[in-house]
Length: 112
Image (cartoon, rainbow, N blue to C red; front, side, top):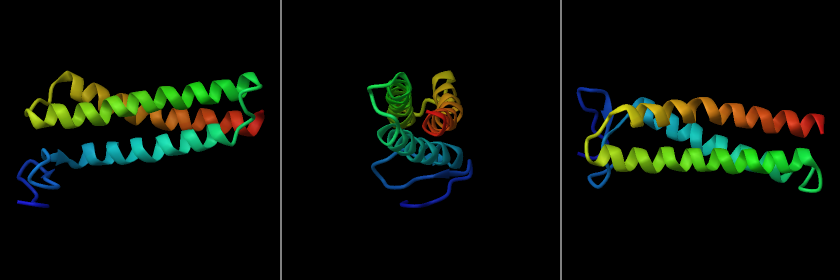
């Protein structure tokens, strides 16, 4: 049932992937776009010669790791039907930390 909507508001992208809720798909989209923005802001910032540039790179690396854990954990946990505490924790952490990291890198770029 490719693309079918289930009664629990889940979307199944393909037969080989687990069904995702709309919130999960939104969180993945925020994670991908936010990670790319954080990396681009770090790359165009003041550079590693300054403390601000080094902070931007560390922020981008940290958010990348958080979001990779979120997306990989989402795929692995949903494939076995687990929707426990770890699932909600990673989604919430990703949804809060990603915009904060982009905002921090943007402020560093503007003020440095």
